[in-house]
Length: 196
Image (tube, rainbow, N blue to C red):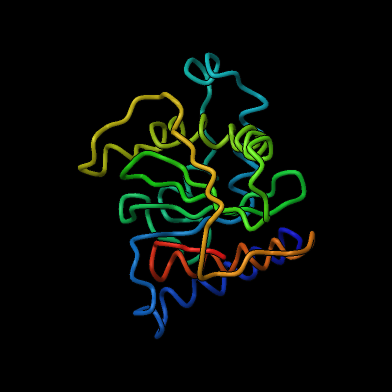
């Protein structure tokens, strides 16, 4: 699936969350579009951590995510406990659950693998998100508007989650986008996910 397909599906989920079926979605969560991860990856390439501390200024586009202006039907960062971000890493779709309460990122991956090497590769692909999210939250004033503990600028911890039971996992090399959308909807409805 392309980014445009993913964003169209996420837009429909956002409409559901705010429409008559909103009672199905019990979590304090929001979603971002595919541009979010792409923008963060670009910033990570452009700025080293030291440079980011000294001179990086986040764009209005990234600030809009925190303030609930992007994507359409989004919620403000201060009104949610976690953010779900679709991430295309090496041509494979995964979802990152950015937990603003526990200050961690959990990646849910539909690929059937138990290989520690694959998890190491996936962790490396998520480095832009784990290192840049603290800067984005600080510069967008996230901690100014909420009673949560102010976090420092160190990287968020990362957990690669290859879920275990109840929800199916892909057995091919092309359906990762559809599985990711399914996982996002499942997480929005219950926050927990068990994959078989």
